[in-house]
Image (cartoon, protein in one colour):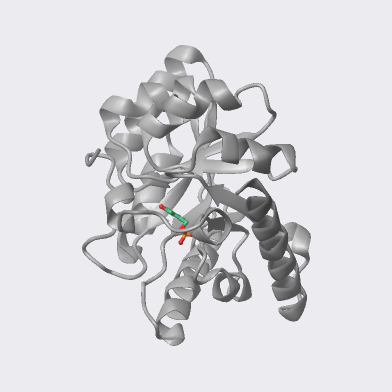
Length: 244
Ligand SMILES: *Cc1c(COP(=O)(O)O)cnc(C)c1O
């Protein structure tokens, strides 16, 4: 089991590098984030000890459950699931440094309020629904700039870029269109020169489509299955924090 995880990691790392070179990109520009939903702490530990230290959960409960087992191994925690406002406190208590799934103002505002009390800041990415599927979370692309202008005023949440989940499709063109849309949106936001907003990160690409995402400009790819193996439930189950 453990060996497989490490072997898979090596394979993915090599593929990411090769894909960067193929697309004239510096491999240092692309971070491998491990999506660890349903993966037991001991297997995550294996990856952390091997130097793969950027991880993310989808559900607050899993973050809490695994926290004690992992806290002594240096690593970086992002959060990539749909977040309910009543669970913000747990995100902040468990060393999450970036919430990638901010898709509404009230969520950003409530996180900001708590951070103000604690006198600290957190990084966020704005999640955009580039596939326009109703089942997916994320702000619609045409409303993203307005949302970013609103959130930019909040002093304790720092916008660092955009996140998206590409269309689940066998048609590569349609997947690519999602990632291209996110890249174009990033460029538009950069041009808008909104004070306090950085657009350095593009979190896009998962096990099935990360090579397309890298070709389109991803700086963070979020990989689960290709490293840890298949999960038992469909992904929609894990994306919705209200389903436990
Ligand atoms: C599960 C998940 C991933 C990783 O998906 P895989 O297909 O298993 O690589 C990436 N992003 C989000 C938001 C996820 O929930």
